[in-house]
Amino acid sequence: MNPLRTLATSALLAASLLLGGCVSNQVNLEEVREFANASARLGGYAELSTRYRDTYLREQPYLPAAADKVARENDARRHAAYNDFVTIQKAVVLYMQTLAALAGEGRYDFTPQIDTMGAGLTGLAETTLGQKQVSAYTGLARLLTRAVTSHYQRESVETMVREGDADVRVLLEAMITLTDVYAAANENEKKTVLGFFELALPLADRPQDRLLYTLARAHVQGKTSEYRMIDKRFELARQGLAKVAQGHQKLRENLATMSSSEMRQMLTNYVRDLRMIRAGLAAD
Image 1 (cartoon, rainbow, N blue to C red):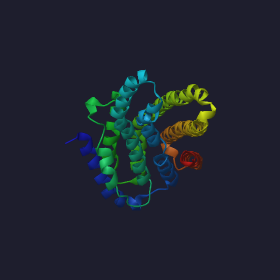
Image 2 (spheres, rainbow, N blue to C red; image 1 turned 90 degrees about the horizontal axis):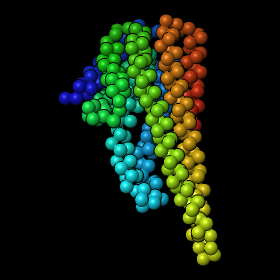
Image 3 (tube, one colour; image 1 turned 90 degrees about the vertical axis):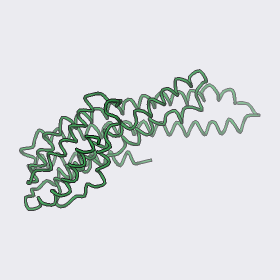
Image 4 (spheres, rainbow, N blue to C red; image 1 turned 60 degrees about the vertical axis):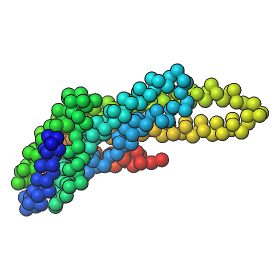
């Protein structure tokens, strides 16, 4: 059996049983819960990962024949890496969901998340990620096993944040780096597609080609708007991931005073920013 699946399954089943038993020992962790929830729900990265994977489908009609072979090889590499790229996001999301549950006020059913974490990175030894990212992923799986064994809610939250910070930081940094990779691929795609029309449109500007020319111009306008929107989403995704990393680091640095009014206000500000970024990512 996959060792990560075993670890994750044990952790999540334990969480389901133990979180309901710590109600009488709760402290005020509302802002921690809200920050973790906002971080888990940020969005954007998965959509951009899928867009990156499907680059070839969009650019293929506009590629010169000489470039198609290299483009197909790149397509194969993107598809091979895709599962690992989205798996690290799922690990961060599950961590944040667990942190939110530990900072909550009642039971939480982790059953839907068991397979999410348990599936793990594809083949570990054959993963397209580096050893640093694999170690961070494995570290979070092990942390989920240990952290939920505490009988006191505050101790569980502090354990999660203290021991999870380094691994969460590594995975968030990887997600930010991958977002930059996606953006670079999108920029190349944009140059390929729009460059095709820059060369082709002047050749079609003849009376007998009026309909074709008009349709092509409308298509260019649509593609230009699409790329403008996607460029904005790349920037928002970077901002959101950076906010999550910053907020978690601040939480780690201020565990002793996380219930102070200053720290609670700081987390509230991060939650506000993350919700605004999420709304921007969801906008057309």
